Length: 208
Image (cartoon, rainbow, N blue to C red; front, side, top):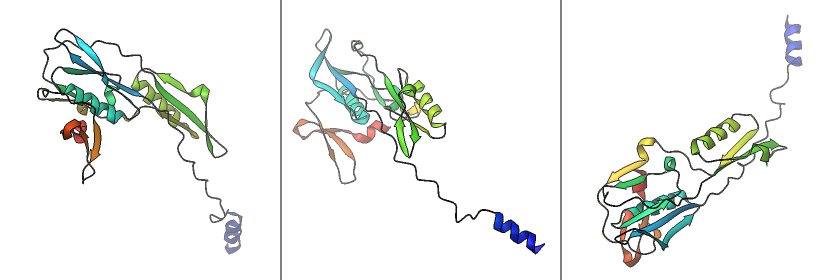
């Protein structure tokens, strides 16, 4: 009996001798998306686009903060191409104006598919597609990621819970200052600043 056990042990592969799985390479590249916010001012009759209050940025958070800042001022409104599923829109209870004119171009969201070949993520053009609806882009990315040895990226940020997608607060403030910039306080909190040192729009409002 001992002889049989010894022979079985000798025949079994040694766990220590098995080569470890090679580590996966860093994640494949992600497409960049440029988000737009257009500022409008009410001239007493209609909305007029203000060229010096328009923003184009690859940072969705910056765009959403700017959109909410423009909307927070009386006689001002913003148009945008931001995906409503991905940020908090601050709604103000001032409904005396018509909607901003619709001139938003069609937005396409990119999903890039990659296959792991010889330890590298290689883009597969035949499986990389554009979608007009964010949910379709996320669904397709998930279907690609479910296949072993495949990975997909997209140019959308993560979806936030539906209850955080809108926030209704007070009437807009009166005046809208000129161009803005960011500063960071001692706690690492980013603050949106306006000319003449005015600070009124805090970064954390975006997450309410």
